[in-house]
Length: 417
Image 1 (cartoon, rainbow, N blue to C red):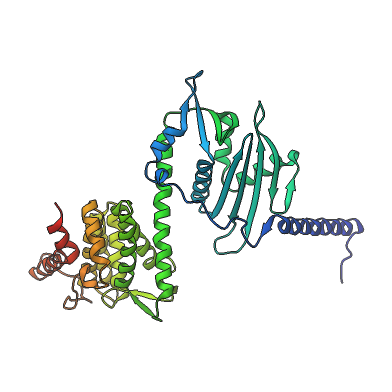
Image 2 (tube, rainbow, N blue to C red; image 1 turned 120 degrees about the vertical axis):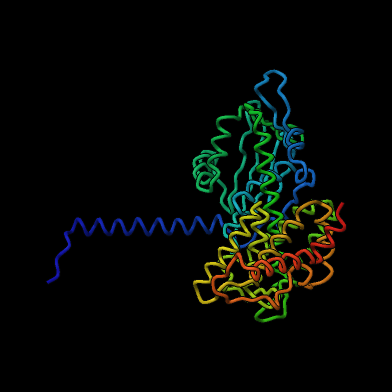
């Protein structure tokens, strides 16, 4: 027997359904007004070389003491500086975006295009127009997509959106520290209560951003190399190493630190080979014909970059000991890959001289014998080895000798001062 729904409850459900439907329709209409499938800005402004290489010095140039109050500072930002800071903030949120700014005193106009989701053609295009007044700049116009907001709604809408996007900390900092804002000629002048440690903090932030940007450059180059490959199942690590270290060599010739470029190459390769989606990749990466050798080599190299060379050796040994209890057994092949990767990373990032020699060697040929020790006669699938035995010690010395004889070890050692 079906139970009858009270009339008041039925009307409440209908009203709730109607309100929900209206909200959904309004949300869809708002998205259609605000969002777009194409960015209005096609080219992202490149960050200046000065800002990349010496952020602390540039920050000291744009932060000027106040003539009347020693606790105050004047932050003088050109339109180029505003674009750089905006791109940096987006990069810290791992967001792709483009910005263009221009001044026509007393007005400042900024236009922004932001991709909302990686790989999805969905963009937020925005524009803001400010006019300077004796008190503070007045917002003349704010446009989000095809929606132009009335001045009274701007603060109400933007603050929650900024906090939701993860910029709440910057808003609080602005409210607590900024005491004045004016547009002067071709720059924006910001008066703020200053902390001396901010320069050091900004230095660390910028260096972190530049490091990540460098890594992303090699990640994209790696994906392009894989996409251009004619192989269907496997690709040799030697081919990837040659492609990325050729790019590292070219970038170092333009004045970028070779040690940092090489470190970014190793991190990008390790992230691809040992990443979460490694088994789903179209092409499996081989080193001396084996997938596990490539994974051991790059994992050890990545650990060495973090200053954990000894830990890398211990971890590799512990892994092989654990394998003796499983089906694969102890492998001196894997041990050789660990040792080769460890030494490779150390030499490739030791000094600018050794880093450039490594770039020159590896950009010449995809030959894996330049950086990976020969493993063809090394035993594996062993039960628990006796680490005090002469056989184990002899094999360990043999591996170390082979690693030391590699072109990336012996040639670099002989050439370095």
